[in-house]
Amino acid sequence: MSRSHLSRAAVGLSVLALAVLSTAAAPLHSHAVVGTLQKVDGQTLTVQTSTGVQTVTLASGTTVHLGSKTVSTSELPAKTGSRVKVRYTESGGRKEAESVTVSSAKHTH
Image (cartoon, rainbow, N blue to C red; front, top):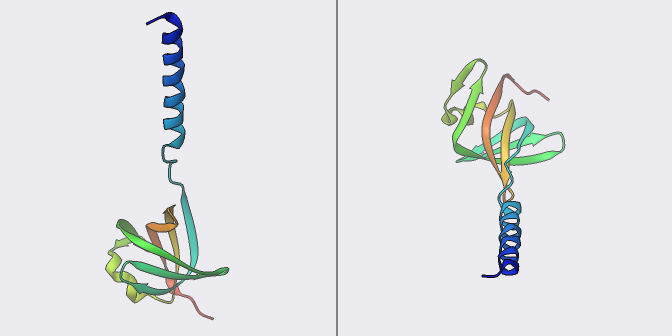
């Protein structure tokens, strides 16, 4: 191969590498929703916030905190009406819970 062909090949590979790196998945950023736990339906939490209703899916690694205790996700249905903070990541429009923190007091109107 001539020098010019090698230079073009190197430039081509560099452009290809940059294209691949720029289309790689961006790191997931954590978000939070705070409100009243309205409903637990299977793996889906429904939370009433000050701006409307939000739904978040429980993941296999979701941790649930009740005060200083870590409890099972199976205890969440008994906590409807409680204030919660749900930290989640969003991918493809789906909110997946990383953690749920349940307030010890139920929300009153």
